[in-house]
Structure formats: structure tokens, C-alpha cells
Amino acid sequence: MKDEPKQVPRMKTIDEIAALTGVPKHFIRQLAIQNKIVRVMAGRKYLINLDRFIDYLNTGEEQTEDEPETISKGRIRRLN
Image (cartoon, rainbow, N blue to C red; front, top):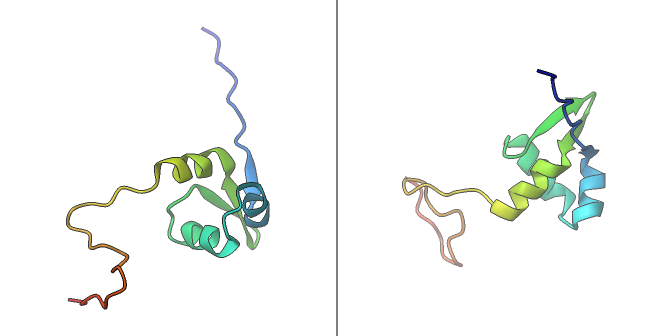
């Protein structure tokens, strides 16, 4: 059996991802810091997998039942 060649991921900087998708740089940076998107560090810059980022935008993140809502709909949320 022959090994199939692996596809090289399309890695982009935060600035490039923001320009391509229209998503604010700050939001992308926060997702990278929180490990919610696939990224690697190249020196002091994050390189983000473009295809996986687009998948993240299409699917979002699943909220579990025990996890509180992040948006309180204009009211103050009680912290436990």
C-alpha cells in the first residue's frame, strides 16, 4: 500500500485571517489564547489553521448544560 501524501495545512497570521474573514483581530487573538482554535506559535506570532478556523466559525462551540450562559441579556449575572 502506498502512503497518501498529506495535505499541508494553510496557516495564516491573525492579520491575514481577519482580512480574509472580516472577523476582528482581537476576537481571533482571544480564541487563540483560549485554545479554542488550532494555532501554533512562530516566534511571537500565532499561525492559525485557516480551514479549521472556518470550520469553527461554521459550527461554533457547543455549550454544556452545566456551563452558565456567557451573555446575560443586559442584566447583571450573579457569580457563585
